Amino acid sequence: MVYASFDIVAFLVVIIINYEVLNPRADHRYFIAFEEYRRFLLSVLLFIALDFMWGILDAKEIMFWLYVDTVIYFLSMALTVILWTHYVIKLLNNNNKWFEVLIDFLCQIYAIYIIIILIINFYKPIFFSYDTKNEFTSGTARLITYEIQIGFFLLVAIYTLIQGGKRKDREGWRYLAIGVFGIEQLICIGIQMYYWVFPVYAIGCLIGTCTLHTFVFEDRKVEYQEKLEKLLEINKKQKEEIGSAKQVAYRDPLTGVKSKNAYVEAVEKLNDSIKKEIITDLGIMVFDLNDLKTVNDTLGHEAGDQYIKDGCMMICNKFAHSPVFRIGGDEFAVILQGSDFDNRESLISEFENEVVENLKEDKVVVASGLEIYDPNKDKSVDDIFERADKKMYERKKSLKEMK
Image (cartoon, rainbow, N blue to C red):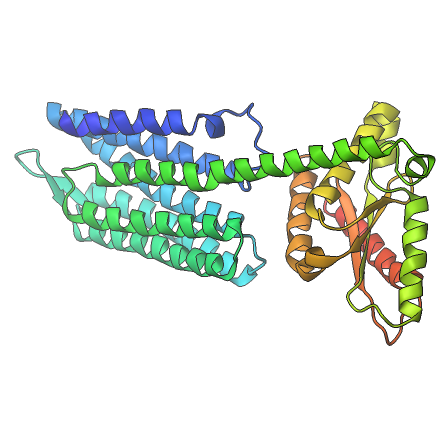
């Protein structure tokens, strides 16, 4: 019964700590790979519940149901490992396709392996058995299975720690926390291999999920709120500036970003810099909202206006250090500057990831195209814009084909 009491505490704490994740109606916009993490948490709760039942049935020596629970116990434990692996790969999402394919293949092989071994165990106890005294006996296949699970956690943890070490921002620290979780889990599995009378893996899941909640989920939530506060502050300052006629002319009334008039003036200044050959780092990014006409026709123009605002917010959130211009009904342009220009590849990758997620969830979809100033062939900003515009329409077409 002492064994089961640990599981009760672990089960309740995991639910309480992660209530916001488990609640499907909560706001999860700031949580990357939310569905994958939620499925992992549910698998952890399933495992802890089965571990609790194992402790009860073992104490009562109800052998038939104890055997059934033990089989499902090992299946659910394998499920936590597989779903954890999928979550981490989805979270990193760094376009390393060969690694993703390899991990997915290994997960499938492992799932087939654990099912086959447990079926064989029914006829020949190579995984586990209960002796004449109703005591649990570990088989060779059980130890091999745990070693495989340790290998999964070790492989993904090392990969995550390497990716986290490459980044110097807050996301890098989150990756390190996730990597530490993997190390902690493989240690718990190593202990569980030889000390099965203690719920070590369940306790490890409890400590690990609490760690992730604090250093990943809550930290990203705080960062999101900080960005939102900055946007609200920017919006407040913009409203204060609307007093002059020029400010009205240079500010788009629907979205609050710079207008086409402001873009024309900015282009003139850039063209002057290009002529004087005093400009080096310059990127023009063009955006266009997919399916705005469909939204207007089916839901009305008020919904269409909101669709434009949502698309604009996506752009502003990602390219927060560069001026954003609304140059048409559903067209936007960004002049990449400073840190946004330096970090353009990672910003664009994150932006495209959000677009793909929105496509799956029927949210606003924004096609984009980027081109960089080439002093050998660009005589004006229009030359850069034309190439970026062409890329944008190619992306627009590919997004429609993905539906």
